[in-house]
Image 1 (cartoon, helix red, strand yellow):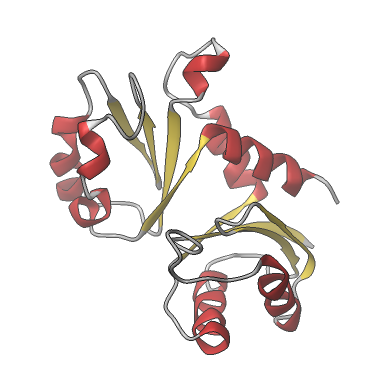
Image 2 (cartoon, rainbow, N blue to C red; image 1 turned 90 degrees about the vertical axis):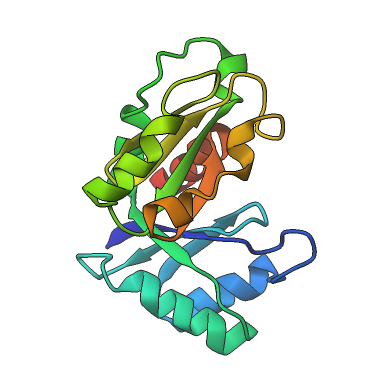
Length: 181
């Protein structure tokens, strides 16, 4: 069995696209996934599958969400190994716990093209910093997300791919949950 993490974009935010975690877990069970567990209401699902590659799983999950709940939800999928590599690959030299509260990772559905990466370059330096590494965007906010000019930048449009973001704390908790059998 392989452990995967499905990161759902935009559910249970502002009263929109409401999905109860118990119903989401049941839906994953109907797809024959094993050991399904969720972390908080924002769409973090850890599960096991016999699929050796997660390549087609995100599409299957997204289609089933549409059939079950009646709306579109982009699903970004990572294996446990990929999630651990994201944590190990943090490009920012942070040491203080307070610093990590301002670190976010956006998970991309696809690796961006060279042209798309050029559109992000202007955001790499400044008070808030952005680094695109593979299929992830690491963003470090000097003060906070809501006070940052980056908050309004639509990186999904700039990069031409779906994405969903998680703060560093949530990423750590989801990874810890995925490590447990």
